[in-house]
Image 1: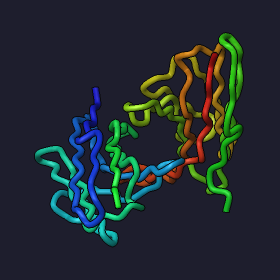
Image 2: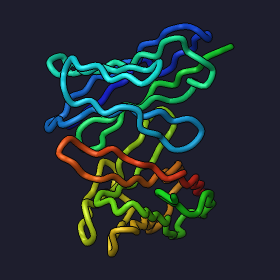
Image 3: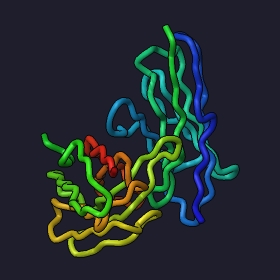
Image 4: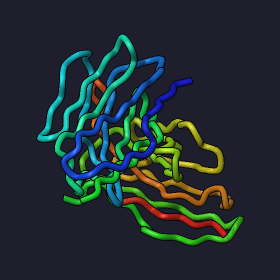
Length: 106
Length: 114
């Protein structure tokens, strides 16, 4: 059965800190890994990763995939209170991890 | 741009009642799906559709029915509501490409079953 595990489940940091969120997976038919950010309502798309070792970057957020070790990380540098959200990872046929709840304190 | 719309936003049901959650998208996406989100469990796939007339079960399909008569609409029916179905329900749509599905989510329906 496909499995996606995110860690940590919850994280509290202060503004300016750098955080690393993890997503490991076991799926039978890997095509891509996606990261989403969920604030108060619906998840919004951040990145799609398909190839190992190629970093995707958007502002202070970046992500990379390791298809050999079956994981991805999402980095957020110089965190701001607006980064507070649940970050979701999804793999294969839309199997989501439980998410990491990030709280950034001023 | 409407994107993905869901109605209602909130609903309270009594055990045993039935209802339909509506979902519509105006992006001409082939793929539509329904998820439920419970605390600490992320999003779990209920049913999905890869095109009009085609539906399939996801991870947690029991107690729910779907149909896809048009590209735009993908309603989710609760046949006989149970307290275990108290959750937030999200509908999503995506264009399909060989790499996967980048999904666009509706605003969600918060359902409480008493």
